[in-house]
Image (cartoon, rainbow, N blue to C red; front, side, top):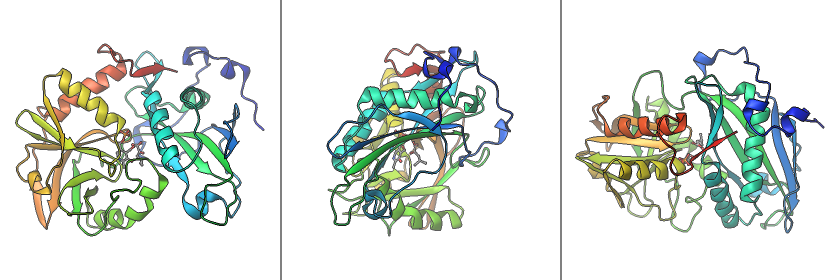
Length: 355
Ligand code: PLP
Ligand code: COI
């Protein structure tokens, strides 16, 4: 059992923590597992509340072969980022939203969930304990991954008798982006990510395994990722494997309406608010894949991906190309979001939380 240094458990902000910069090649961060120092862990029974929890050294966890998560996929993930500003101070972006989304997902998957305060404290503590892994300003961020799993043993299909809430973190750079190359998407017509009544609207771990084949096939053909269609009509666009999608036509921005089959991204919500602030009209509605042909620009949003313009989309063997320039509406939305995160534009909605 690892005892966190007193300075760390009592620290109120990252300024209290003796930050030593880590000798790491920050210029070449991708999106891969890098072992950091600590992870947060707590458990509870099916009926109970999560215990206070503790920081442990980052490492393997022991699981029963009959753990609910291993056999029946009872698990929810979250994703949030800690980043460093030019002055060295470190911040999280909307961790309370992640906490609430985990609670909604946990309810869907018959799991108890940490309270919003417990969740935010655990995310903060994990980021703080690994603060030497928060890259220098402008070089990337610390991706914080809260994980809620049914670890108790269960043989019949039923909720597990015990749950683990764990938070680990990893420094990351760009997700999916290959240098300065724009993203290329492939519209998948065979496999679907989610269906009505399923768990596509929550961040269940069961949403990712079934699309690995589609992602693998698209990557083998040189695409960055897959754009999914609705499972009933195979006609309306839904989202990308780990990001939401937006289309721009003139001054109107459109994005699929969340009706249970797409994840309501926190970046998506933030971008919609920013777009309204900047005077754009935003439509949340059904969007036919055919509309991709006449769109002026298309972009994706997600914690890992940020706000990313799309260079081309291939639909029914036709490649639709989009112009990439600094004039794009997505660039304006992205620079506003980043300026709020960096403290350059006023954070009037309390989105950023100092660690
Ligand atoms: N859609 C899916 C399937 C995701 O996994 C993610 C990533 O979290 C998103 C959308 C974007 O959500 P957010 O902006 O909250 O990261
Ligand atoms: C995120 O953006 O937070 C994600 O969860 C992406 C991840 C699935 C790679």
